[in-house]
Image (cartoon, rainbow, N blue to C red; front, side):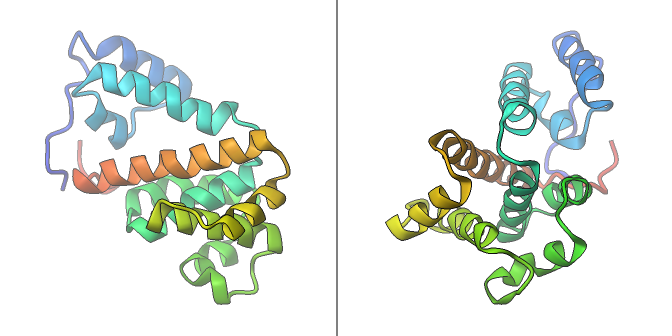
Amino acid sequence: MARLSYADLNHPDAKPLVERIVAERGSVLHLYQMLLHSPAVAGGWLNYLTSIRQLSTLPGDLRELVIMRVAVINGAPYEADQHAPIALREGITQAQLDALDQWESSDQFNAGERAVLAYTDAMTRHVQVPQPVFDAARQAVGSDKLMVELTATVAAYNMVSRFLEALQVHSHDER
């Protein structure tokens, strides 16, 4: 059960953004139902996460691998529930999803994926990233642009999971 009630989606301040979210995403997920207590924050959030998920050139499989790993580390089940189907559509296997909690000892990940997961772990757990971990991730993604997009993705989904877990937003909540 969420720690706050979900926002009134019919409130005049929220209505334009609700319409945009429905047009772009099909429905207003619990995350946005909570964010819409502050339409200004919800609007900025929507723009930022749309850039990360839909406008970034980071390959979808790496993006979703990062998102799912952040969810595992941060104990964010809502984030994992929302992104597992997307990860599978982007080419992550169920075996990889199942192995994410123990990726370091798993044979489910190639060298590039392992470098990206190590980078995700360092950013999420320690904030500062050791140079060898950075260098391996940079080599795995292949360009400065993709390194920025990878870093922004890890940072963004840490923001998402922290918001969700602080307010206890979960998939099974009733509106």
